[in-house]
Amino acid sequence: MSILKTIKFNGKTFETKFYHELSDEEFEYIRKRHYEKPPKDAVLKQLVGIKNGKCATNLITKYYVKDLIEKTRKKKSKFSMEEVFSSKELVGFLYGKSLSNPKVYDSNDIVRNIETVCRIGGSGCVWSSASNFPIEAVDYIIGKYNQNGIVYDFSCGWGTRMLGAIRNNITYLGTDPNYELVSRLNAIATDYQSATGDTVKVDIRAHGSERIVRDWIGTVGLAFSSPPYFDEEDYMIGDQSYKDGMIYDEWLRTYYVPTIENIHQYLIDDGVFAINVKSMRGFDLESDTLWIARQEGFDLVATEKLKNRKRPHAQLGMVDNSENIYIFKKQRGHE
Image 1 (cartoon, one colour):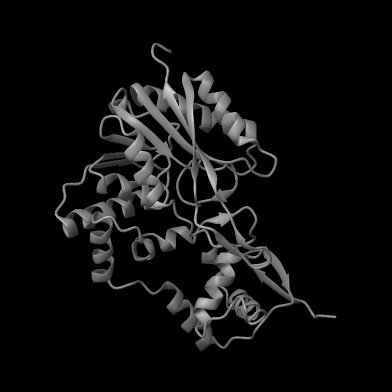
Image 2 (cartoon, rainbow, N blue to C red):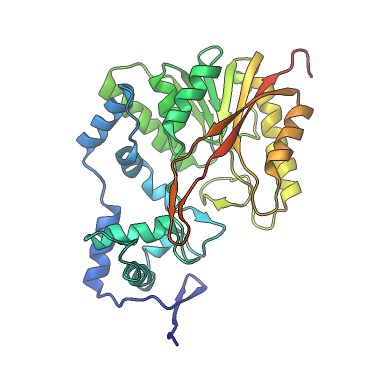
Protein backbone atom coordinates (compact mmCIF):
# COMPACT_ATOMS: atom_id res chain seq x y z
CA MET A 1 0.00 0.00 0.00
CA SER A 2 1.42 3.37 -1.02
CA ILE A 3 2.12 5.92 1.69
CA LEU A 4 0.44 9.22 0.90
CA LYS A 5 2.32 12.49 1.16
CA THR A 6 0.20 15.30 2.66
CA ILE A 7 1.03 18.79 1.37
CA LYS A 8 -0.48 21.90 2.94
CA PHE A 9 -0.19 25.23 1.15
CA ASN A 10 -2.23 28.46 1.14
CA GLY A 11 -4.84 26.94 3.43
CA LYS A 12 -5.41 23.93 1.18
CA THR A 13 -4.41 20.28 1.58
CA PHE A 14 -3.29 17.94 -1.18
CA GLU A 15 -2.46 14.24 -0.82
CA THR A 16 -0.42 12.27 -3.32
CA LYS A 17 1.49 9.01 -3.69
CA PHE A 18 3.97 10.79 -5.97
CA TYR A 19 6.72 12.76 -4.30
CA HIS A 20 10.41 13.51 -4.66
CA GLU A 21 12.23 15.39 -1.91
CA LEU A 22 13.97 18.50 -3.24
CA SER A 23 16.82 20.51 -1.81
CA ASP A 24 16.47 24.28 -1.67
CA GLU A 25 18.99 24.53 -4.50
CA GLU A 26 17.04 22.11 -6.72
CA PHE A 27 13.79 23.96 -6.06
CA GLU A 28 15.30 27.34 -6.94
CA TYR A 29 16.90 25.91 -10.09
CA ILE A 30 13.53 24.53 -11.27
CA ARG A 31 11.75 27.82 -10.48
CA LYS A 32 14.39 29.87 -12.27
CA ARG A 33 14.27 27.67 -15.36
CA HIS A 34 10.48 27.66 -15.42
CA TYR A 35 10.20 31.45 -15.29
CA GLU A 36 13.18 32.23 -17.51
CA LYS A 37 12.18 34.63 -20.29
CA PRO A 38 13.31 34.10 -23.87
CA PRO A 39 15.74 36.68 -25.32
CA LYS A 40 13.98 39.84 -26.51
CA ASP A 41 15.59 39.64 -29.96
CA ALA A 42 14.09 36.16 -30.44
CA VAL A 43 10.68 37.51 -29.39
CA LEU A 44 10.90 40.39 -31.88
CA LYS A 45 11.92 37.92 -34.59
CA GLN A 46 8.80 35.89 -33.80
CA LEU A 47 6.67 39.04 -34.07
CA VAL A 48 8.15 39.64 -37.52
CA GLY A 49 7.32 36.03 -38.32
CA ILE A 50 3.69 36.70 -37.34
CA LYS A 51 3.61 39.61 -39.83
CA ASN A 52 4.97 37.27 -42.51
CA GLY A 53 2.28 34.63 -41.98
CA LYS A 54 3.90 32.31 -39.48
CA CYS A 55 1.83 31.01 -36.56
CA ALA A 56 4.28 30.28 -33.74
CA THR A 57 3.57 32.46 -30.67
CA ASN A 58 5.28 30.45 -27.92
CA LEU A 59 8.07 32.98 -27.29
CA ILE A 60 5.65 35.93 -27.44
CA THR A 61 3.36 34.27 -24.90
CA LYS A 62 6.21 33.31 -22.58
CA TYR A 63 7.81 36.77 -22.69
CA TYR A 64 4.74 38.97 -22.24
CA VAL A 65 1.99 37.07 -20.44
CA LYS A 66 3.19 33.77 -18.97
CA ASP A 67 3.15 35.09 -15.40
CA LEU A 68 -0.44 36.33 -15.85
CA ILE A 69 -1.55 33.02 -17.34
CA GLU A 70 -0.07 31.19 -14.38
CA LYS A 71 -2.08 33.22 -11.87
CA THR A 72 -5.20 31.60 -13.38
CA ARG A 73 -6.80 28.78 -11.42
CA LYS A 74 -8.93 26.26 -13.25
CA LYS A 75 -12.07 24.83 -11.65
CA LYS A 76 -10.67 21.31 -11.90
CA SER A 77 -7.45 22.28 -10.08
CA LYS A 78 -6.70 22.96 -6.44
CA PHE A 79 -3.81 25.31 -7.17
CA SER A 80 -2.75 27.75 -9.87
CA MET A 81 0.59 27.33 -11.61
CA GLU A 82 1.87 30.37 -9.71
CA GLU A 83 0.95 28.74 -6.39
CA VAL A 84 2.55 25.43 -7.32
CA PHE A 85 5.85 27.04 -8.30
CA SER A 86 5.84 28.94 -4.99
CA SER A 87 5.88 25.71 -2.96
CA LYS A 88 8.88 23.38 -2.75
CA GLU A 89 6.62 20.51 -1.69
CA LEU A 90 4.21 20.98 -4.59
CA VAL A 91 7.11 21.10 -7.04
CA GLY A 92 8.33 17.93 -5.30
CA PHE A 93 4.99 16.35 -6.20
CA LEU A 94 5.40 17.38 -9.85
CA TYR A 95 8.92 15.97 -9.86
CA GLY A 96 7.72 12.71 -8.36
CA LYS A 97 4.84 12.44 -10.85
CA SER A 98 7.26 13.03 -13.73
CA LEU A 99 9.23 9.96 -12.61
CA SER A 100 6.12 7.74 -12.65
CA ASN A 101 5.79 7.19 -16.40
CA PRO A 102 8.98 7.39 -18.50
CA LYS A 103 6.98 6.83 -21.71
CA VAL A 104 4.97 10.02 -21.13
CA TYR A 105 7.60 12.12 -19.37
CA ASP A 106 10.44 11.17 -21.66
CA SER A 107 12.65 14.25 -21.76
CA ASN A 108 16.14 14.26 -20.30
CA ASP A 109 15.29 17.75 -19.01
CA ILE A 110 13.49 17.46 -15.65
CA VAL A 111 12.01 20.95 -15.95
CA ARG A 112 10.41 20.05 -19.29
CA ASN A 113 9.00 16.87 -17.72
CA ILE A 114 7.55 18.85 -14.80
CA GLU A 115 5.92 21.28 -17.22
CA THR A 116 4.47 18.32 -19.12
CA VAL A 117 2.86 17.09 -15.88
CA CYS A 118 1.14 20.46 -15.58
CA ARG A 119 0.07 20.50 -19.22
CA ILE A 120 -1.54 17.06 -19.37
CA GLY A 121 -3.02 16.99 -15.89
CA GLY A 122 -1.54 17.11 -12.40
CA SER A 123 -3.94 14.75 -10.54
CA GLY A 124 -6.30 17.56 -9.52
CA CYS A 125 -3.43 19.61 -8.08
CA VAL A 126 -2.73 21.88 -11.05
CA TRP A 127 -3.59 22.16 -14.73
CA SER A 128 -1.66 24.45 -17.00
CA SER A 129 -3.76 27.39 -18.21
CA ALA A 130 -1.43 28.23 -21.08
CA SER A 131 -3.87 27.39 -23.87
CA ASN A 132 -4.05 30.09 -26.51
CA PHE A 133 -6.52 30.69 -29.32
CA PRO A 134 -5.13 29.34 -32.64
CA ILE A 135 -4.00 32.26 -34.77
CA GLU A 136 -4.86 30.24 -37.89
CA ALA A 137 -8.51 30.33 -36.77
CA VAL A 138 -8.28 34.11 -36.34
CA ASP A 139 -7.04 34.44 -39.93
CA TYR A 140 -9.88 32.26 -41.16
CA ILE A 141 -12.67 34.10 -39.32
CA ILE A 142 -11.33 37.55 -40.25
CA GLY A 143 -10.77 36.49 -43.86
CA LYS A 144 -14.31 35.17 -44.19
CA TYR A 145 -16.36 37.54 -42.02
CA ASN A 146 -14.53 40.90 -41.89
CA GLN A 147 -17.04 43.60 -42.90
CA ASN A 148 -15.30 46.96 -42.53
CA GLY A 149 -11.77 46.48 -41.20
CA ILE A 150 -12.74 46.86 -37.53
CA VAL A 151 -12.95 43.89 -35.16
CA TYR A 152 -14.08 43.89 -31.52
CA ASP A 153 -12.69 41.26 -29.14
CA PHE A 154 -14.92 41.16 -26.07
CA SER A 155 -12.57 38.99 -23.97
CA CYS A 156 -9.00 39.55 -25.09
CA GLY A 157 -7.38 36.30 -24.06
CA TRP A 158 -3.60 36.07 -24.31
CA GLY A 159 -3.01 38.07 -27.48
CA THR A 160 -3.44 35.83 -30.51
CA ARG A 161 -6.71 37.41 -31.68
CA MET A 162 -5.05 40.81 -31.46
CA LEU A 163 -2.01 39.58 -33.40
CA GLY A 164 -4.27 37.98 -36.01
CA ALA A 165 -6.14 41.24 -36.43
CA ILE A 166 -3.13 43.51 -36.74
CA ARG A 167 -1.26 41.24 -39.14
CA ASN A 168 -4.36 41.40 -41.37
CA ASN A 169 -4.31 45.25 -41.16
CA ILE A 170 -7.50 45.26 -39.08
CA THR A 171 -8.28 47.83 -36.38
CA TYR A 172 -8.51 45.92 -33.10
CA LEU A 173 -10.89 46.99 -30.33
CA GLY A 174 -10.94 45.03 -27.11
CA THR A 175 -12.28 44.89 -23.57
CA ASP A 176 -10.86 42.86 -20.71
CA PRO A 177 -11.11 43.40 -16.94
CA ASN A 178 -7.56 42.16 -16.37
CA TYR A 179 -5.79 45.53 -16.34
CA GLU A 180 -2.36 43.90 -16.19
CA LEU A 181 -3.20 41.96 -19.34
CA VAL A 182 -4.33 45.12 -21.11
CA SER A 183 -0.95 46.71 -20.34
CA ARG A 184 0.90 43.65 -21.72
CA LEU A 185 -1.20 43.53 -24.88
CA ASN A 186 -0.42 47.17 -25.54
CA ALA A 187 3.27 46.34 -25.09
CA ILE A 188 2.97 43.54 -27.66
CA ALA A 189 1.27 45.91 -30.11
CA THR A 190 3.97 48.55 -29.59
CA ASP A 191 6.78 46.05 -30.09
CA TYR A 192 5.05 44.58 -33.14
CA GLN A 193 4.87 48.04 -34.72
CA SER A 194 8.52 48.72 -33.88
CA ALA A 195 9.74 45.35 -35.15
CA THR A 196 7.74 45.30 -38.38
CA GLY A 197 7.33 48.96 -39.28
CA ASP A 198 3.60 48.44 -39.71
CA THR A 199 1.07 50.94 -38.36
CA VAL A 200 -0.95 49.23 -35.63
CA LYS A 201 -4.44 50.39 -34.65
CA VAL A 202 -5.33 49.03 -31.21
CA ASP A 203 -7.78 50.32 -28.59
CA ILE A 204 -8.22 48.08 -25.53
CA ARG A 205 -10.32 49.12 -22.53
CA ALA A 206 -9.52 47.68 -19.09
CA HIS A 207 -13.02 46.66 -18.07
CA GLY A 208 -15.54 43.92 -18.78
CA SER A 209 -17.56 43.61 -21.96
CA GLU A 210 -20.78 44.13 -19.96
CA ARG A 211 -19.85 47.85 -19.76
CA ILE A 212 -20.65 49.70 -22.96
CA VAL A 213 -18.14 51.92 -24.80
CA ARG A 214 -20.33 54.54 -26.43
CA ASP A 215 -17.59 55.65 -28.84
CA TRP A 216 -17.82 52.24 -30.52
CA ILE A 217 -21.58 52.17 -31.16
CA GLY A 218 -22.32 51.54 -34.84
CA THR A 219 -18.65 51.21 -35.84
CA VAL A 220 -17.73 47.49 -35.67
CA GLY A 221 -17.94 45.10 -38.60
CA LEU A 222 -16.99 41.90 -36.76
CA ALA A 223 -17.25 41.04 -33.05
CA PHE A 224 -15.26 37.88 -32.41
CA SER A 225 -14.07 36.26 -29.19
CA SER A 226 -14.10 33.31 -26.82
CA PRO A 227 -15.70 34.50 -23.56
CA PRO A 228 -15.23 33.20 -20.02
CA TYR A 229 -17.03 29.91 -19.41
CA PHE A 230 -18.84 30.98 -16.23
CA ASP A 231 -16.65 29.74 -13.30
CA GLU A 232 -14.38 27.44 -15.31
CA GLU A 233 -11.33 29.67 -14.73
CA ASP A 234 -10.49 32.39 -12.22
CA TYR A 235 -8.16 34.96 -13.80
CA MET A 236 -7.55 36.63 -10.42
CA ILE A 237 -6.93 40.22 -11.63
CA GLY A 238 -9.55 42.93 -12.15
CA ASP A 239 -13.34 42.92 -11.88
CA GLN A 240 -13.93 39.52 -13.47
CA SER A 241 -17.37 38.43 -14.69
CA TYR A 242 -17.61 35.59 -12.15
CA LYS A 243 -17.62 36.41 -8.43
CA ASP A 244 -17.31 33.87 -5.62
CA GLY A 245 -20.70 32.36 -4.82
CA MET A 246 -22.35 33.59 -8.03
CA ILE A 247 -24.84 31.18 -9.59
CA TYR A 248 -24.99 30.54 -13.32
CA ASP A 249 -28.27 32.41 -13.95
CA GLU A 250 -26.90 35.49 -12.18
CA TRP A 251 -23.76 35.35 -14.31
CA LEU A 252 -25.89 35.17 -17.47
CA ARG A 253 -27.98 38.13 -16.31
CA THR A 254 -25.17 40.41 -15.12
CA TYR A 255 -22.46 39.57 -17.66
CA TYR A 256 -23.51 37.51 -20.65
CA VAL A 257 -26.76 39.20 -21.65
CA PRO A 258 -25.38 42.77 -21.41
CA THR A 259 -22.27 41.70 -23.32
CA ILE A 260 -24.38 40.46 -26.24
CA GLU A 261 -26.62 43.56 -26.00
CA ASN A 262 -23.51 45.77 -26.29
CA ILE A 263 -22.19 43.79 -29.25
CA HIS A 264 -25.47 44.36 -31.04
CA GLN A 265 -25.10 48.11 -30.49
CA TYR A 266 -21.47 48.17 -31.65
CA LEU A 267 -22.12 46.35 -34.92
CA ILE A 268 -22.92 48.07 -38.18
CA ASP A 269 -25.97 46.88 -40.15
CA ASP A 270 -25.28 43.31 -41.30
CA GLY A 271 -22.35 43.17 -38.87
CA VAL A 272 -21.17 39.73 -37.78
CA PHE A 273 -21.02 38.34 -34.24
CA ALA A 274 -18.76 35.26 -34.00
CA ILE A 275 -18.39 33.43 -30.70
CA ASN A 276 -16.37 30.37 -29.74
CA VAL A 277 -18.24 28.77 -26.85
CA LYS A 278 -18.93 25.36 -25.37
CA SER A 279 -21.11 23.83 -22.67
CA MET A 280 -19.49 22.30 -19.60
CA ARG A 281 -20.28 20.57 -16.30
CA GLY A 282 -24.07 20.68 -16.73
CA PHE A 283 -24.24 24.33 -17.85
CA ASP A 284 -25.66 24.47 -21.38
CA LEU A 285 -23.83 27.60 -22.43
CA GLU A 286 -24.13 26.81 -26.14
CA SER A 287 -27.93 26.62 -26.09
CA ASP A 288 -28.12 29.69 -23.86
CA THR A 289 -25.89 31.60 -26.28
CA LEU A 290 -28.16 30.74 -29.19
CA TRP A 291 -31.28 31.76 -27.28
CA ILE A 292 -29.86 35.04 -25.91
CA ALA A 293 -28.41 36.04 -29.29
CA ARG A 294 -31.77 35.50 -30.95
CA GLN A 295 -33.52 37.56 -28.26
CA GLU A 296 -31.02 40.38 -28.72
CA GLY A 297 -31.55 40.63 -32.48
CA PHE A 298 -29.17 38.16 -34.12
CA ASP A 299 -29.77 35.45 -36.71
CA LEU A 300 -27.58 32.35 -36.68
CA VAL A 301 -26.15 32.06 -40.20
CA ALA A 302 -23.36 29.48 -39.86
CA THR A 303 -21.43 27.25 -37.50
CA GLU A 304 -17.69 26.94 -37.97
CA LYS A 305 -15.47 24.35 -36.32
CA LEU A 306 -12.57 25.58 -34.21
CA LYS A 307 -9.96 22.90 -34.72
CA ASN A 308 -7.82 23.22 -31.62
CA ARG A 309 -4.56 21.36 -31.61
CA LYS A 310 -5.04 17.89 -30.16
CA ARG A 311 -4.08 17.89 -26.50
CA PRO A 312 -2.14 15.04 -24.85
CA HIS A 313 -3.69 13.40 -21.79
CA ALA A 314 -1.80 11.06 -19.46
CA GLN A 315 -4.52 8.38 -19.48
CA LEU A 316 -6.55 9.07 -22.65
CA GLY A 317 -3.77 9.74 -25.14
CA MET A 318 -4.44 12.45 -27.73
CA VAL A 319 -7.73 14.26 -27.05
CA ASP A 320 -9.56 16.21 -29.78
CA ASN A 321 -10.64 19.56 -28.29
CA SER A 322 -12.48 20.89 -31.35
CA GLU A 323 -15.25 23.39 -30.52
CA ASN A 324 -17.92 25.37 -32.34
CA ILE A 325 -17.75 28.98 -33.47
CA TYR A 326 -21.29 30.27 -33.93
CA ILE A 327 -21.72 32.95 -36.59
CA PHE A 328 -24.58 35.44 -36.20
CA LYS A 329 -25.69 38.42 -38.26
CA LYS A 330 -27.32 41.50 -36.84
CA GLN A 331 -30.98 41.75 -37.76
CA ARG A 332 -31.79 45.01 -39.52
CA GLY A 333 -34.19 47.26 -37.61
CA HIS A 334 -34.07 45.25 -34.37
CA GLU A 335 -34.13 47.44 -31.24
